[in-house]
Amino acid sequence: MNNIKIILAGPRGKMGQEALKMIDQTPHFELVAAIDSKNDGMQVKDLAGCPSSMNAPVYDDAENCIQSVEADVLIDLTRPDIGKKHLEMALNHGLRTVIGTTGFSSEDLERLTELAHEKKTGAIIAPNFAIGAILMMKFSQMAAKYLPDIEIIEKHHDQKLDAPSGTALKTAQLITEVRQEKTQGHPDEKEDLQGARGAELEGIRIHSVRLPGLVAHQEVLFGGEGQLLTIRHDSMNRTSFMPGVKLAAESVMKIEGLVYGLENIME
Ligand SMILES: NC(=O)C1=CN([C@@H]2O[C@H](COP(=O)(O)OP(=O)(O)OC[C@H]3O[C@@H](n4cnc5c(N)ncnc54)[C@H](OP(=O)(O)O)[C@@H]3O)[C@@H](O)[C@H]2O)C=CC1
Ligand SMILES: O=C(O)C1=N[C@H](C(=O)O)C[C@H](O)C1
Image (cartoon, rainbow, N blue to C red; front, side, top):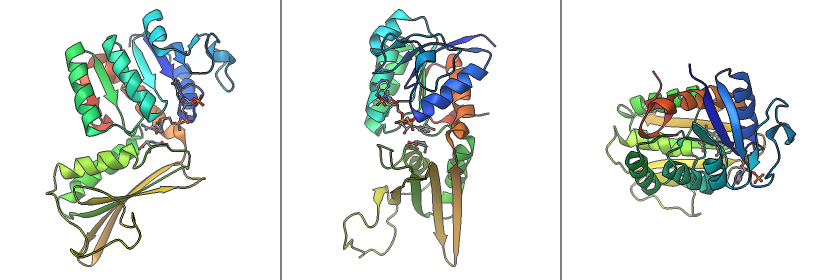
């Protein structure tokens, strides 16, 4: 496989640190720069916790980095508002991009799909990189045909900025592809405390839990007469996401246009 030159945005973050290790351990990946709003001019190896072999410059200005460094792929693991900005910027420069940050609305996705098409550039937005989470979403889509009364409970660490999680939204979207819109619960139900029934997407209820100690977890509950099916996935740590990040960085080299969800590139 050809060498892939990578710019990583968010190298000091929890995901960024795992991604640096993964890049370091992948012979055909080469880190050529990092985007970090706080450490302009430094080398990645000098940032706390970063592999000592990484002689790549740090830029605080993403546009300057993209223009100055010869790269094949930008991987963004920052935060929802920044990920969006970086994807738009990279596409405008014709730079292939893998986005791990979540919080994309359907309007954002529509606009960025058009931009990727117009620029003839590959991009992947992966609401969840964990292979088990992709399977949980696919199995939920299968089950929804037969058990259409569904509630999603997603549980994350308390530093998470977006709610519901990108995974919960993607799960609900996949379900709506096979299920008619449906009102669940009693037709006369009312919330005595606002939010008690969670958020709602085409009748599917989504409940977001945020607690210290959690990493990333989701249960999809399917209720039927006298039965309950639960499909559950747990990420115990962030190394669970790295095979997916690696697959996305390899796959984005071969595609044109925007792909939303790793299930679309898994064989
Ligand atoms: N798709 C998936 O499978 C997964 C996605 N995620 C998503 O990935 C993102 C990162 O998660 P996580 O690592 O846990 O979060 P962290 O808060 O640990 O890391 C985010 C990092 O981004 C940096 N950052 C913020 N703004 C900028 C900027 N303008 N330029 C460069 N870097 C910036 C932060 O730096 P500073 O400290 O200076 O603010 C921080 O180091 C989140 O959006 C999360 O939802 C997480 C896990 C899995
Ligand atoms: O912020 C996180 O941590 C995670 N974000 C993604 C999401 O919003 O679904 C993926 C995973 O759940 C971890």
